[in-house]
Image (tube, rainbow, N blue to C red; front, side):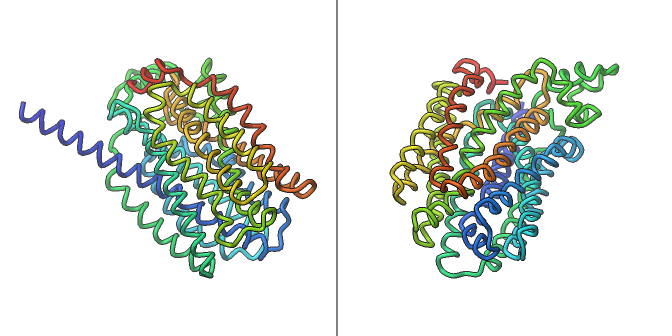
Length: 431
């Protein structure tokens, strides 16, 4: 009995340490790109870019995620979700200073492409590892992880805004941040969960064995490696079968959610600077407000989801996001913009974690496959919207171009019906 108690204590300690490690990874991921956002007007002026050119350069980030992001699944299968996430964090920290060195549009776009690829790998891996930790806890904690991502983004935005306002050179700022990201990512490696990816979800191995047509019982063995079936991500899509339509719907929902989130980071600073003529410090505040309110929403998200269900919370949030930004754009004042983007962040806060949670818990679908595919589909929003908004802005002005966001918010309201209702959400967390 005493031995069993010691094992239980060790298991609890392992879970708590892993939770802290995953929290650290989410903080790192949120902090990384946020340190570039307030510098966008500076980069735009230094490289003499039009709104369309800046939008295309920003779109290189999701383009990298779309082209190479699906490699996250095989990488997770080979070396584990925790190691993939930590390695991506290290590489992101090493690449970040290059954004301040880029001498041309092509060079800046190449840096964004690399950061987008690494972000996609880290996003899939840290969410997959977070779901492993959540299953050990037996209750919803995924919104808390995403809240920490938002905290990291807020901290990054404030850090960069302060550095820009104080006249710190962009290269010095991004280099210091890069060192911090490398050290933090390395530190998480020692506390991540051991064992195969499906260790906390035995049904995942059985479902994978059935889908692959495996002729040996070792695939369903909890002690097996948990390596996904041969053929990579495309084979994973074929294996999913009937769940493919649900996964596609979740992916489109995440496209809309990602597009709404991205509007503050890609265009908030430029809108404040060029359309509303705000000060150098204030131009970063729409992004900071968005991420701050998103943090609050995600800190409350687990309780709200347990009480009302992901479906109701998602619909109400998407409606709030669309209406708030529409009103802010109509008022066209710096204070209204900060408030509008802030309420947008609050409204959209639970959509991304709810979508990834649902994708990672589809019956018969490996968590790594579900999260990777849904996250990959979500990158379409990050890829398509910046150049679309930039092109409209060059013709009709950025204020009108940002009206695209309330339109896609309507789509998010409709697609939130695919999320779990109250009872299903509880059952999914128990799994």
